[in-house]
Figure 1 (cartoon, rainbow, N blue to C red):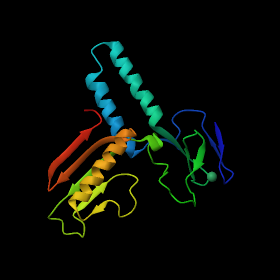
Figure 2 (cartoon, protein in one colour):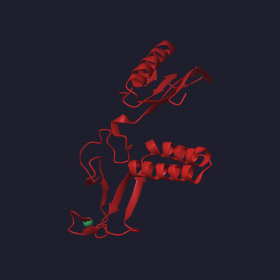
Figure 3 (cartoon, protein in one colour):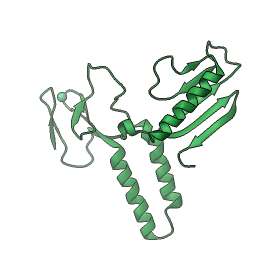
Figure 4 (cartoon, helix red, strand yellow):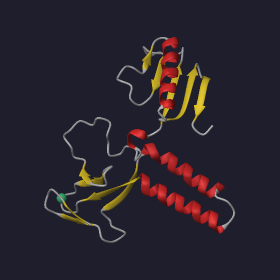
Length: 184
Ligand SMILES: [Zn+2]
């Protein structure tokens, strides 16, 4: 593969071990990847075949989660592969709009955590917070426990229904009030 950079330089990808090429995994996917490696080591089974299957599974997962990054050796501009396996540069003037090149390989189907927390001892203007992708600015702040609780369970049901949730917990004054995990 050859890529022509905006500067006129040519980025060549025809061999391995290129010093101007990288493999990138989003932080949204990184811990799933580490967990999968743990499982492959600890739970793959006793036989050679089991181990081979587990190793292949990790390689497949790495291939799926990884984006390629190239740097033009003439001007230093970075290119990455997008969802359509095309190359884009990320020096964009358009707004971010939640589509960072560093985002999950699962795109909009990424399963997110939902975290709600209320603490009476908080000295900030809000004692309650809800962390969740897609909330507008200010929507995650609560001055009433009841409203936080209601919003938490609303989001929980909605995200579970749409298969977009990996885990959830709601805490009140450091006590777990509710907990849910995709694996349980
Ligand atoms: Zn260039």
